[in-house]
Image (cartoon, rainbow, N blue to C red; front, side):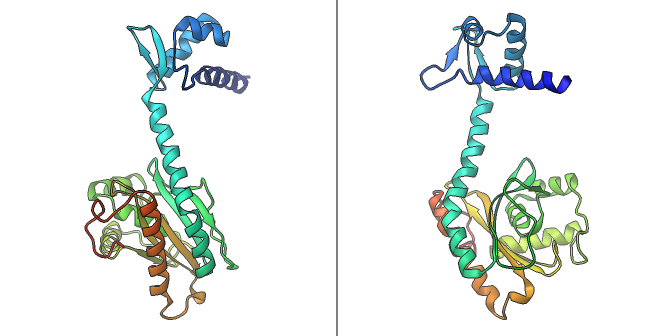
Length: 265
């Protein structure tokens, strides 16, 4: 019964938020009550909760409720993810075809690595990662690439929040050693992991930058080590960097507002 009650409350909240459009962007208490048909006490309680959460904003002069900045922030997150996916889509297709590898795209969201897109390779070894899957922030080639471009204080905060744990025999758990690898990643512009997440798999990740010069995502290729021919690692890195640079340009990046690192792209 409690679950049903919670669902009904959510439905009431949705009915309120659905009132807002570009043309009608603010309402008085009486207008919301009339349009939703909600009881006065129930509506008052819901509006107060939405206001407290930043989802609605109350104007004491006009006595009206409008959408809050928290919704703007959430919308920005959605827009950012969708924009990155859209910008990266054709390059992920091309990389998958050229490298015959699984191509992954990820961002940091709520202190986690979040996979937002994937192109499956032909390998018999499958990578357990799909759009919407969350991992610890430093997980694998994408996580390490993203954390590499954070400042030291933020890195250490995340390691304290998510202490590194052994996944395979080659997983590095010593924080100081991890920090050295992150610094090297920042210097060379890519991260390579071998057997650290899945035994037999090698992964390479590179950063993606937006118009502000901030690293907002990472793209990477992973495939069985036995499929990687001698000397082909350089080719993989070059193709990933080329794709990441193209995606970054579509997000508004240029070298004038980007990281001052000749190895970045």
